[in-house]
Structure formats: C-alpha cells, structure tokens
Length: 400
Image (cartoon, rainbow, N blue to C red):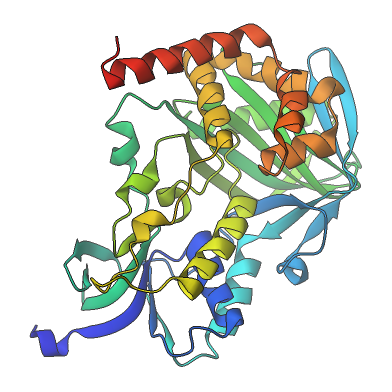
C-alpha cells in the first residue's frame, strides 16, 4: 500500500475499553476537539455484556443515567465478625458493560470526525513526525496514539515489582427462596476458606431472589473454572439456597501491580487504562480511577501545545504520588504472604470509618487522614515491607 493510500488521523485509540471510551466521550463533550479526526480500533465490537463495573461516589456522576443499581450500605464479613457499613455520604454504584458501551457509542456515532473500525491491531511504530499503526487489513498514521491494549510481558518479565491478579468468576443467579437483601451489597466476605490466599465473596443483590455472586481472589495464580464455581455453589448452599437458575456468567482477571507502565509513554504514544497503570493497584478497581484520569487526560490535551519538535511529549502526562507507594507496600506483603490479605482488609474495616476508607482508596485523603486508615492495619508486615522496598531502592542506586 502506497503512503498516499494510508489514512491519517489526529488521534488513534488502539483498544476501545473503558479508558478509551471515557476519554473520547469527554473529548466530544468538551467541544474542543471538533477539528480533530479520531479513529478507534478494536477487534471486539463491544456488543455483549462482558463485564460489570462498580464504583462509589458522593454526587451524581456523568454516568448516572446508566447506573443499574445503587446501594447505601454494604456488608463486610470475616471469620469472627460481620459489620454493616453505612456508606454515607457515598453510594455504591453498579454499571453493566453493555449499557456503558451503548451509551457512549450512541453519542460518538453522531460525530463525523470520529470513526470506529472493528480491526485487530498488529503493529505500532512511532516515527519522528507521526505514529504508524497496522491492523490485519489496513494501515494508518496519526499524530498521537493512545494505547489500551495490555501487554502482560511488560510486567511479568521483571522482578522488581510484584504482579498479582484480581481474578474472579461470577454468576448472576435467580433463586427460588428469598435470601438476598437488595438494600445492601456484600463488599467483601472473607468467611470463605482462604487456603493460603486472599479469597472472598462479592455479592451485588438486585432483589430478594436475584444477585451477582462472585468468587474473587487477590493472588498470583488463576484457578480452574471448576474451583471458582464450586466455591459459589458452597456459598449459595450456606445461604440456604438449593435451587437456582444461572442467568449470566462473567469471568475476568485484572493485574494488580505498581509496575511503572507510564515509563513506556513517549512523545507521541500514551498508554492508558490497565496498559497505562490506570487500575488501582491495591484493589483492582478500574472505573473510578479511569474516570478521574480520563478527565486529566482531556484537560492535558486541551491546554498542552506541541513543542518545537511538533509533539506533545506524552511522557510528561503521568505523575507518581504517595498512594502509589502505599500500594507498592501492600502488594509486596501479599506477594510474599498472600494469606494476610483477609487480616489486613478486616483490620481496616472492623472499626474504621467506611467513608474515610473509600476516600483513601480514591486517593483523595490528606496525609493525616492517610495515617488514620493505615494505622488500623497490622504494623509489622508494613514495617518489614518498607525496609524491603528501601533496601531494593538503595541496591538499585548502588549504595549497598
């Protein structure tokens, strides 16, 4: 194909998951990119309900119209206690993946400067004045590229930063008996057998007989499908459920790591979403983090002008903060002693202020508020992790 036949765009998004769609949707709403041509590339047409996103919020958000269910309270359970958490001033929100896709694409389809193409990306090559993108059927160029296609090898091929997975399998079930409380989500139920890992049940009840019941682990290795499903069956039986219908299933694995994905950013290529470290490393929560970071990205693109070289220097977008370090310590602990997860999270929620914990997980607390949350946790594992991290840093700097 001759270069004259290669179609050029201002921006190309490789991958159209949560982060890409949030960003492009906000670019459209801002009204500042109407003169920019935007191409979204993904081999998945986004026409199935492939996932569920949850997030907590104090006020109504941009996504309020597609929130499927909200809860004002949540249950936290451990082997020796249960606590009903009053979430005020927060609400816990659930959004279905297909509702999100349809909502965004309905808006984007009204703009002639935005193109979606159902293609698999095979090649990305950054040149001095543009970025080349190849798919199985076409070739494109762009001024700037936003990549959300996650490459496992980047994190797994190193040993400096632990890599765990938040992996899960969930059933949306309809039961014959009324066993669920539709006014209360089960945030984490650690009463299930831990088997040397961090394992819990997560329940999103829609009615007294309908709920998403999900078996979740924060650990290094995935389980067989049968292991997840067996645990869900046991959990339902313990709730008094013998007969039920499985309406839908969902399964996934989200990387949990403080690996600095942003170091892969360059003058013209910015990694976003999980590929850019937008997932909250210590919890695997993605929706709220992506919402905040996509806001910052749209603002960055709106006010940043190209340098003399003609590029925006995308590498300057990301800024590391103290919460990244907190996550690093927790993941170091869970990597070495995965069984401590239930103890750490339970110590936070047993007597801690739920609203303060959520604010902390949203990375919006002051340093003094950070301490109120952190000091609820077992001290010794974090002290040891701190010394290990500092020792590694000194070793890398050649001090030791």
